[in-house]
Length: 165
Image (tube, rainbow, N blue to C red):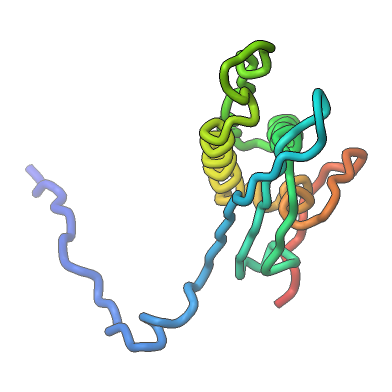
């Protein structure tokens, strides 16, 4: 009989960390915040927009710091584009809140502060899960969503190439 294979449990040799490593910028980072909800318009054409701010040092993104304003339907557009053109499993968006659109409610419906905050948090989780996926980072629609002031809904889907240095 042969000896059973024993896993090597020795620790990997690692170099000691110096102050530059400990307090320097992280090697790769991608931070996306969804904040500052604002209600736009009046009556039935009222909607909420959110500031979407991205900071990164990943070479795939041409801008290292960007800030755009998006509404829920823009997040829906991004989700639909990724489901159509990419090979990734796209996480769900926070719900449409159809009941909140009914008339004669005792609260503000879609414009209730607690609902807006709940939706903002859900949108932030959604965009961070998408943008953190290596395959999604190559999709042109994600770059447009995060870095361009207006979304060109007639764009030609495709991949982004890493920007040099």
